[in-house]
Length: 303
Image 1 (cartoon, rainbow, N blue to C red):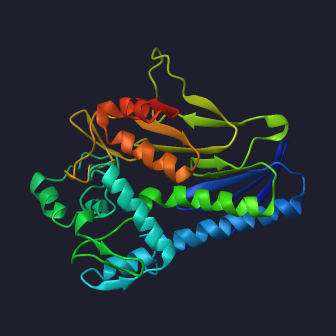
Image 2 (tube, rainbow, N blue to C red; image 1 turned 135 degrees about the vertical axis):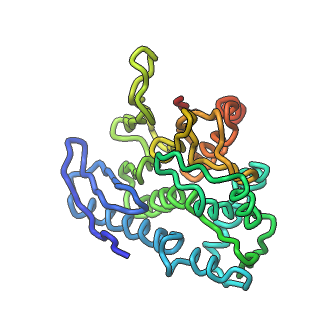
């Protein structure tokens, strides 16, 4: 598995930017300092932690704990406390969503390939795969997990946001300066900038808005501290008979969510909270905005 494991530092008018590649995304850390050595320390700290989480939980890495669990389905697999806590969070998301968010639904990727084509799987094929989905069938404890034969787990729905939060915690241990961590659009700031100024963050429209729609291509959000996370189908979808099929799948049906916004961005104290709220909102379909209003949180929905 070819992995780019290097970081780049660049001076900016407002500090130093550190970039690296992880989790299939270009990642950026911006720190308000002119001190190159500090920026390098922070950059390496964040990149190494993100790479650690990627290596540990990526379903694409044959050595990851996810791969070990999946390859060992039908048998007991030992887990550590970090994995146990992530599974607990996944369980909470499953309960809150009434089963619509389910980390065992990743097996659907074997039949759904969101490459912009019109290749829609048959109902029979979806129903067949659905027999291997169901978080309620999984047995786990603080030390082990047991999947039924043929089942898999996929932590991709929470991994990147978890990495953002871990990075913020580590940064606060080494500096009180304001730092922004952006992992492919899921991001958080440690604090307000100098003179209590906010970070200016752009949220791109997921598609070309009609010229007369009144929708801007990019929405600028002012972020003092806390996190933003976005969920949507900007780049991953299918299109058949003029109907667009989102890559956001309903784990209870095996089919894409319909009538949902193209993207939803949520603000929350932690990135993992923002991420799951954005995803859960999309799963409400046409009621996505109402769901978020009921949570009394700040959000941006684009259709």
